[in-house]
Length: 146
Image: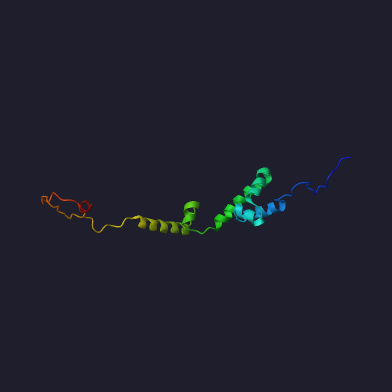
């Protein structure tokens, strides 16, 4: 006599940590724009568990890749139009272009050295005792101190 178990029963052993309902909730969170760590924490599991299932389940791996791409798009669309988006995203809308131009001009002004007021070196002559006091025999003020 052959023993069979009911189709709904998984068998003996440890119960699944990452059920099909949790997988769907995880994919929904990732698609909504949460990072992989945030989505895993939202359903109460670790990212390691998700990675294990993605390694062993090709269908889940493909669904996760599609959800990641959709989530990146959602996160990128939520970013404000500013210099960051101009530089890293290639956004050339008038708002991003103006923000990048303003920031670049500010950095250029800050990078310019200030003009020096007194460009003449200190030519103070310090005479040494027991020496001739000819003008060509003098030391620089800092050399005389040491």
